[in-house]
Length: 396
Image 1 (cartoon, rainbow, N blue to C red):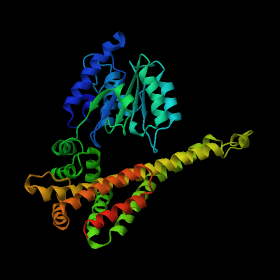
Image 2: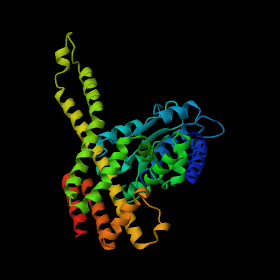
Image 3: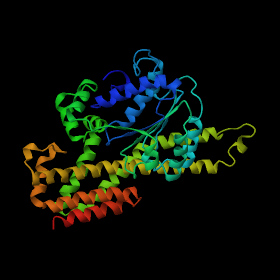
Image 4: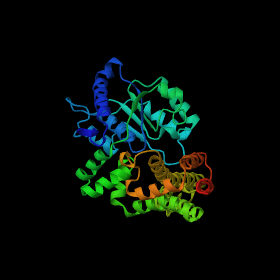
């Protein structure tokens, strides 16, 4: 892997296909053969957003020999997020609204100013509301001649992306990177020692970003331990307390991540509205600002909610992984099992002894049901408490 596609770990076939598509896109400008809508799918950590951004850079690349050279101005500005003809839609709240999508569609209709294409990268397209998806569908069905849409979603399941929108896109599926490939990146690009790199890669669930955080961030490791302690707490009779602490930790993490940014946004908005001004019209400049401030507060609240739920979801996946390891041990030869939590093998073996296989399956279902409940906006404390009740029932 070279050039802009280098960050894609373990996706050699995808890199080759996208490079070939970028080559074809150069002639497609004149011949009309370029695919204008793409859908990148893959499990968390597979790099679907990275792949879409790398492809955007390859489409804009000015190197005459190799699209996606990684050195030209078009490549570097695209990867840095400053290219004038590449727009990234990164949802921070619970969904992508119709209003936001209409604004993006208007921009996408313009002719490119400096690059070959007007490229729109929509990360987490599964967060499109139905109405926002319909707005996007209209322009995807009849795309502007020089516009390319790159959508990213977990899968092609109708719950993630509408069937009609999916049918208008060329599909690119990414796989979960293997642990050795992730460990190699951590060693060569992050300068980590082999032992730390191997451990982080093994427990990351194929998510290179999380592997990097676990290897370098003490708090990330503490959050993982806190999540797995919920399973241990079931046997100790303190599952509800541990579950409540898990939710509180996710909320605290969201507050910590959001506080500084929220304050900066409020200060910037206040300045833009004329706060502190003393000249003529200063008072009138702030008149009617209540609606703008309320809209900012709404967006900040939505962003904090999403951040907290994402943190809680990571914890739930860790819990499900430990029950999965126990189930694999109960049914197979432990020596031949690839563990989700190889450093927690003793816990998994103890769990396999205490809980029958059908109970382990119900426990996994309970964790998945909790994730689904959170997606339906059930209050986290209620959803996690219901999960804890099911986990307790399997050990009775």
